[in-house]
Length: 348
Ligand code: G6D
Image (cartoon, rainbow, N blue to C red):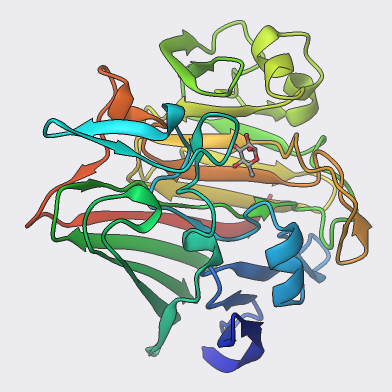
């Protein structure tokens, strides 16, 4: 097991460090202190060829200018909050509306754009980094001084576990996730249309025209959102279903998980032979097939375009503070927010 640190770049005159973690089988991953971003993950294909399977850049400047949350932590609250407003104990809070009239992914210049502190972890069978960040009371309109930890641990079974924890000195909201875009083809040779997804989920959230949950749970049965038995993404993405068309001809929906820690999320790519199993203690996963990934930039030499990656963002339900039937993402004084997700990289 190895972990090395080197300078990656500068952000607002703060040094951004990168960490390369490698296990005894050649599995390698890189992450940086800007946004705890996972910049690369190298796994073998069916012929043992190691290639990168996540979308990312090689400079701070590119991440700041182009990145739609590539590889980053998202918070204080992942997802959208309607009109950027919520009430806690009779007090109304107004957050920046950074997407139309809604608040998205913690607001502008949020956790994904901050330079986090980092501490190396080195044990015989695992290496990792404990990232930490002090989110000040009032940051992007949220109450409470919140201390956040995101710990990345790589072991010798080719598993990456991300554990999030947080405490606050005033009741607040928190709902963290990692926004990595996976593409198992290797070095983005192909898009994700032929990737196969399997989900232990019977229901997903209906979204409105601003991508906010309406509060209605829809059954996946007889719909393009049924991944219970596993199917190729193009079968869903190319559907005429209203919810598919609404989010830019693809998936951008929260799915409620029926099980935890039991291979509840599985992504495969037959051509490369790569397989990713995700297990979490979270109640849901937002599946996003990068329907909005268009723009005048390239990603390590590949022109940005839709369907180049799939995000599997394990988290609490979006806008839960404003949806009476959802479990609210409230963190109170004296409580600890703690959640973890494990990514197992293997082969079909
Ligand atoms: C778009 O609607 C999607 C979000 O789900 C995603 O997180 C973001 O792009 C990067 O806003």
